[in-house]
Length: 231
Image 1: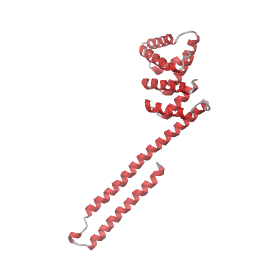
Image 2 (image 1 turned 120 degrees about the vertical axis):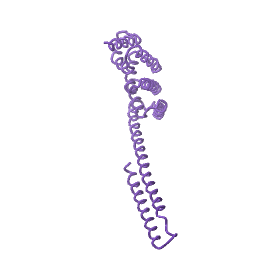
Image 3 (image 1 turned 60 degrees about the horizontal axis):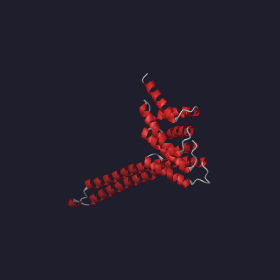
Image 4 (image 1 turned 180 degrees about the horizontal axis):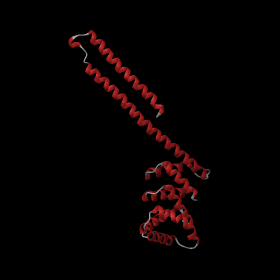
């Protein structure tokens, strides 16, 4: 915005000088003419007013465009930073970062998420153990869709999903199944998907070790949430 402010102010100043010049010229001509040849000053004033309006509108429009450009640049910087983190988490010798970046951008467009947030969520998925590009993309998409459907935070949702999937040895292809089970269980109890997933993330490793199945754990957790909400 600052880089455009000076040129816009200069343009406004030039328009003001031009207006004064036109008015001065008209007054000079009028002083040398008489009768019907006099220049209509109201028309001059109207024209100069239009010029001033044009300058003001140009400044406003330029400011809006500059602000929008600034936001776009800021988002692009955050996206690049997030993808740089992703590149440190994968084996770039076997992972095509261009493909991975394209997947992140495409999912962002499809689901309506900010690319930088999607990239951060991808980093969370990879940290959760899904390091192969295709697997990471599957879990990323599942996390984004669950977060979108439940109005949850994408990164938090991905963290919960990967923890649950790891606890029960669920492969990337099973992310939709786990997501669906979370949604059903939250509807059975009086809790949100986000709250249920967060609870499951904490207890799933111990439950799985104790031989408690995912469905059983989900049912018990949602039932407990329903009892607690009525007390």
